[in-house]
Image (cartoon, rainbow, N blue to C red):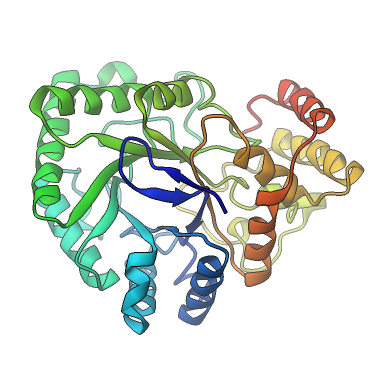
Length: 350
């Protein structure tokens, strides 16, 4: 497993990152520990979590994922230095977290203290803003005119950004955070934080994680170009489109304990006729070339130019093994041409 530099930071991370959001909902604590052990054995050193996890978000499971990681670290303190640990602070919209208030300096300090306690560590390597205060095209809200962008108060946003960045800078100086990053943001958000960091001599955002997969390629080229040219690591989340690109929902199947059979906060927004048609087309390509759909879909993201590390997640060890095995799959020019034809037919399936 190759290690690469995380943007402009001094961190070296594996090109596959272990995502954890199902731990505490679809996975038990022992499942979580088993996945962590296996990932470490496979030389994966990058672990991503969030204060709001497990998903779908619920008051009774909030923080469970971080706590599972914390108990794993407590079993062997040497593990902490072997991993790059990333977590995220939630923004508004989650009423049981700081009464659903917007991201601000005070809330970030409270959130970090809670995460450090849950994770049983003194610091996190990468602390990320889970989503911005302003409306952005996330979780299926990327269609024209879906967001009222003209209602955004730009100066207010900039003031909030500066407060957030100043607070994060203080926490970096205190040694509680090594580096900072974004999630579910846009080129404007990335560039504003970079501009403010340079202007006020504050920490630079070193990464961003957004959804990116064969059903959702909207970050190419604009977000990815912004990242590459500014030395910001691009970290795709949900490279299997919430499990849809594993093929588990083909032919109307709805397996138990899966994302589409569990009520989601933002609905099952990937479940469209075009998504199913695209999945069938990708399945046919994978079958033709002796691959599973999972390996085809993951290999595409793993090998995508501009991607730093892809965040995978699994609800079983068998799934995790297949996800990691896909790292060694090389997609031929013929396969890539066939994939490109499907993308042109279904550029925005959901």
